[in-house]
Image (cartoon, rainbow, N blue to C red; front, top):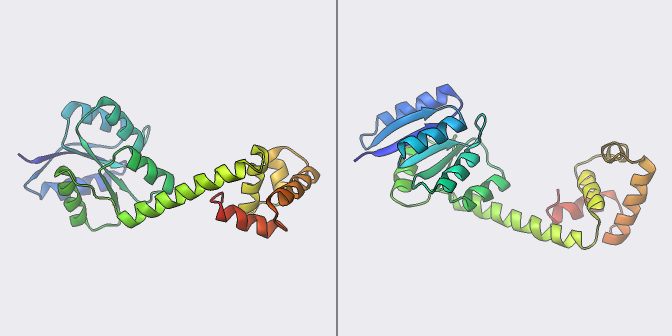
Length: 212
């Protein structure tokens, strides 16, 4: 029995290329090729493929939203994410959802074929170094946020993030709908609470705590 696949990507050229790639593999059969998240979910519900290859960014439903829906339905289909980039929060959510494979679009086509076979066989294909670093950064961020929340008000934390992002007092005031003078007062209070001696030290503190 071949490995049955549903493919999803909102770029027709990439989707066509994926279809041609798997057509060359005797042990694989493409049941559907989809260009949107909702179309992908319907195809998975209809065909119940062994593996679904999900582009993470698609119209109407992202790859992660499709994955959540597949999980809710309790389907046995194994899931592989295909992406050009993946930020830390998306990596963490993918792992929490039980995504079985994460493949970067820059990878060689034969590595994608290898990934599909491994995932079908019950293994995972997630680059360990990348996932470990994402987890470490997320844990650092959560720890930093808890620590800062004991020292600063939510408004002050927002202000720290803006300083770390390089915004000047006038820009911060405009975003928070307060005067530039009020921003200066808030900053003075923040410096005292965090025991930092200026804007650069505050930005450095924010980076260390994962707030920037």
